[in-house]
Length: 222
Image (cartoon, rainbow, N blue to C red):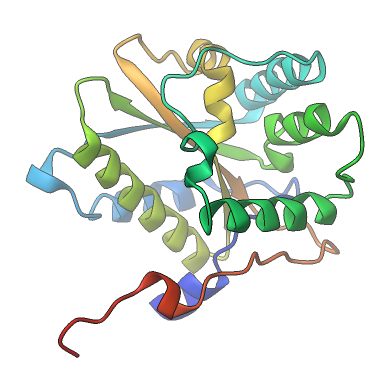
């Protein structure tokens, strides 16, 4: 699979099969992803790879919190800017959210919608592997950008292995539960989780729309 195909076929999968992912595949992907850009070569990310019984236990505890309507732990960083930053960002967010959860069979007027969405996320959409990406609290915006490039590299390499993924900032809502499960110390801050596995057969793929190039790119001197 070439790079263009990996980029084009990468999507946030929200229905995984229970087919296991071999450890050697994960090791190969993560070893190669270490070549991702890193300012000053700090390589600020720290990944916990959770599978098997530890993941099952974590999913169970997080799902129980979600179904109980637990609002989650206090936020260490905002998921989105206040007011979503206005148009066009709010419009894109609203449209994508409607597409995602309609595909999952959750209607917008369902009174139990928040709990159902949270529970699906807490179960990592059935994925057999979740990667939890942490950074040292001493790191700044530049290193957070590095971690984003690292995770994108990981997700593209997963596609090259025939796997899919779904980045989940939602896990920060249950960061204390995650920290207990993986043994992360107070000196680390959870950036996100990434669900990993094989897409579940029979579930139609969902690709959220992207803005036209002219909306997001300006050529100067071309």
